[in-house]
Image (cartoon, rainbow, N blue to C red):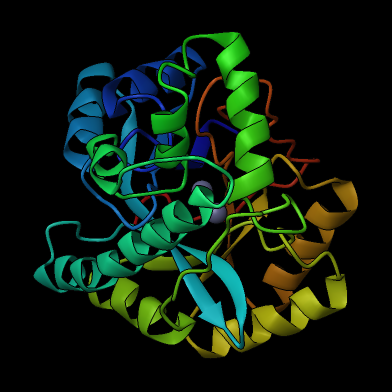
Length: 281
Ligand SMILES: [Zn+2]
Ligand SMILES: [Zn+2]
């Protein structure tokens, strides 16, 4: 498989510029990729330009954090019209919830003796705001110095990352849009909606199948079947769920940066499954 349909750049919480990211994908022999930054499309023009120069197709994409009955899920929009006014308005309207979340976290961090200014955090962003930008103020240059990278990771898990993955001692939740208007928005802007990393929080196959059917009834088109954290059983289970619901299947690494994480460019295992993603849409 010569694709990776879930990649982040420094326009959200990744560390590479879109053009460097495209070059790295090219070096790995990929032919089709999608840039899917969180709630931001700022990197797409640069990625597409780099793609046309190096002969690699770049599908415009985005990743939304959504709510369904109190649980967080991530929905990718592939082939969206990133110039759409409707999309822009939606992203602008929800931007403030990210700022509010970071303000609350900064306030909570004071209890532990950490002083961080919102202005400094915002100055670290190139596109969407994320908790990683708080870390970047606390540990400048953490992406270049391995010892700082380790300290950053410990800090992030202890204070910023919510349980069960982290301790989240200074964590504050963020209000998220309901899944339904997000799927509608993806469709209205010409995209197809894909459920990213379905086993992220819930590992139960039966529940995942039930949720996929519900999300399909809301218009969901695709499931990210192939993903670095999916073992063979999970991959096969998602493949069956997608087939039974007549949905598209996608493959993505969720790459953010070159580090020891298993989320590296095209680092997933396909377990012999050929995805039916509509590459030529
Ligand atoms: Zn995600
Ligand atoms: Zn992602």
